[in-house]
Image 1 (cartoon, helix red, strand yellow):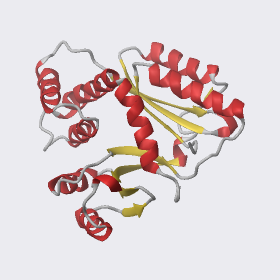
Image 2: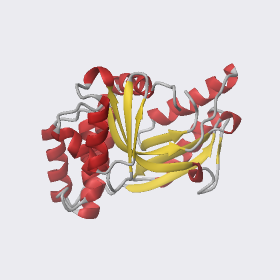
Image 3: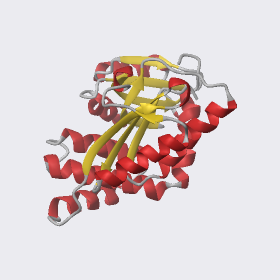
Length: 242
């Protein structure tokens, strides 16, 4: 997506997120609970929890809220047990969509996800039908307007910490890592007090699909809006070139 403004997309997402911050904190709270139950409350010994904490901080979740979530998950044996599930499918013109969920009722979640695809004239596929089109990567976006470092200094800081790639866009820098090296790179940037517009392990499409027909645009937005409104949905990845 060279030449596209990733930061503009991030700002668009953050505007939506700010309007639904309560939902985002609930989503991250579920992820914290699952990570603590699976690997314990110490992020130094629980890679998954460290990732979720990074995501929480990138979404401006207060530290005391994060700590309360960890303590609650570690000490509450009667807490709701959430299960992970993933759905893959197609939107208009063959766009690929991956939906990751945490749920206490898989039947309910499956029905609601399927309904979102159906209402947007898409379809749920079999496991693996589109995930091969994506790569799991750590992705950090830094707005140029919020970064005091020169491009070369920022690049060397990221690469020295273990980043795979460093890309410069019109108004932002993009740093890519393996999932395993993401936390080390994020920590190195934090140490230099570099503000990050986004920092998370995500699924990046290998190729993008451009939609131009009004009907296709209406349908893809319908699917994504319905998924966004679903409490059990944690993340939605797609290869629509917005």
